[in-house]
Image 1 (cartoon, rainbow, N blue to C red):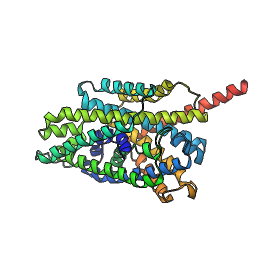
Image 2 (image 1 turned 180 degrees about the vertical axis):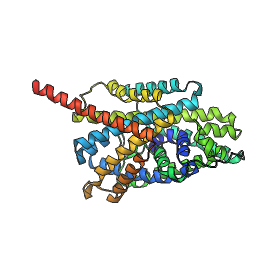
Image 3 (image 1 turned 120 degrees about the horizontal axis):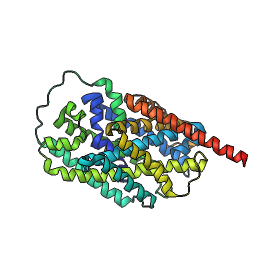
Image 4 (image 1 turned 45 degrees about the vertical axis):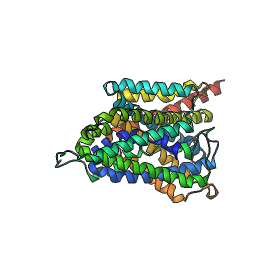
Length: 395
């Protein structure tokens, strides 16, 4: 549970409530439940697929084994797009809370540092995860206590604004608050593998803990800021503390945000590297032997996303790409043999439907960016493979 929480508590809980409130107003809180159900189904699917293919390098390989090369290439493109958006959102969260005066520079610096550590072979140990989760949960609990111990100001009433119609879009954005379960449901090579019996308890417990934390934090910031002010906030927890006369706690909040950013960004970049390794092993990418090259391929688009995209758009792109990826993942889990299952097939069917619905509910700009990047990524993979085959034929 601690390993999964260390990869999960990041941009979603620190910045996701603002774009969610912009899409659905106060209705974004019920959207958390929908996002949790989708995440639970996706976690079940990845756990079963890892059990069926324990040596496969991640979701790309699962999709390729079950559905074929082309769905795998599209799924890999969606996964890399989602990881790029998530990395940019996590780094932007770091900048907004820790160095708000130089948000972009701080975000780029964080990506470079974490990517360099990954290239150097530094692993995020279980002990670091325990420490990070303790710090982050403690800081979030402090924010909730302060926000509920001080009477909120009179927030102006808004006659017309976002409401129930934006529930699905808000659920998509908040889906990012639950991503990170693959650290235990589909561990990387060399990481600890957990039995199906352990995961049957740990996976629902992790999703449940994140849901409770998100409901508590979202209710606290909504109480102090109101839906309209929350929707405009680049750093909702910081602004809620200021309104609740908790300015003296801002350094503590900044420290907690920094710990959460480093912990979750390390997982995000490692997940991108894992997909790139799988594509290289299958021939969809040229063989790459240097670890640093994979880190550059994973980190460079994230740096571009930080510079080009607003944090809310980066988060929505990350959520949209990830939801499309889990659509393919659930589709491939659906056709697993019965002896490879530890969860009912209906969970994969529900996960497939929810993933597609959430992805298609993304804000228009995020959906357009994701679709364009998906077409470009899949096209580049196909073009590269054709060129390599042509060289082999000539040789």
